[in-house]
Length: 254
View 1: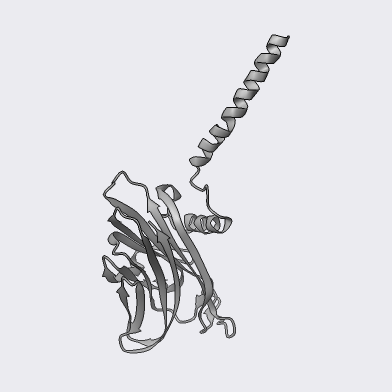
View 2 (view 1 turned 45 degrees about the vertical axis):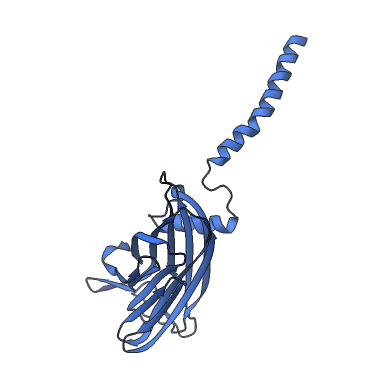
């Protein structure tokens, strides 16, 4: 009986020693490990709304969101069969900016994905062509990009975005149609997502990234952008008019 008890005691001691190590190993493989509750909420939102965002591609080293008034012009219902226009409540937008360091076997360069998402929380009454832009410092070189627009009840529509301005080592701006028309029916823009895939020679420093959205209100002509590696994004109209903007910025170490 004593021999059995000794064996059991030794077994328990061994398990107590190895179980924390095993648990730590399992936790290390969890891609959601180490994020705050706020960061996890924003990551989950991108996972649900952006098919190109994949947490397993690499560590999200910065993710921020701003929510606020985009324009005071009032809003329409998302259901176009309701033609009521708001006269008090302004149009609201949320903007998310994420920096993800991607995993790679390449040792010469560091690779990152800058993701900007502009999400209309209620639909503006004036709808035309807006701009969504991302700019960065430290001369990261963009090797790929894409901009996608998602419309109410339709989802992704490939034909409604186009690159408006691009500087490979500074930033990119895309024109986004805020309304998609099909057989006489108008589908308002729900949100747009812009990805900039960048790389830089392996080094260590701190960089800045800024995302900016411009919404055309009363304008004759087109919205245009100027992008620098400061980083900065400025907008203007080609002829005459007004526009509203929303900005979100972040910094990260690499």
